[in-house]
Length: 79
Image 1 (tube, one colour):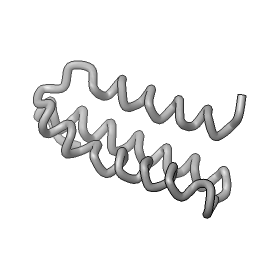
Image 2 (tube, helix red, strand yellow):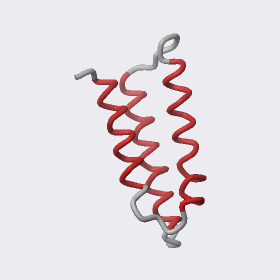
Image 3 (cartoon, helix red, strand yellow):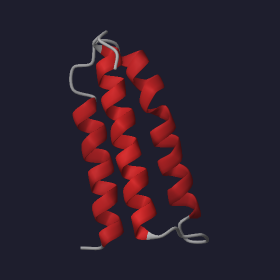
């Protein structure tokens, strides 16, 4: 399997897991929107401008931080 495809699968797996039973879906969408927007920008520019694989891994880790933050903020606990 392509290593970039693995990152895409992990991105959507984290997105789906963070969407399980949030307290407020509107707040959840507002919190994960930057990650989704960043993903779309990276997909569109991937053919013309590629970052290193390590950079994509760090971007995925940052998306996981946004997912986790969205889940905690939706439960009203904060970080």
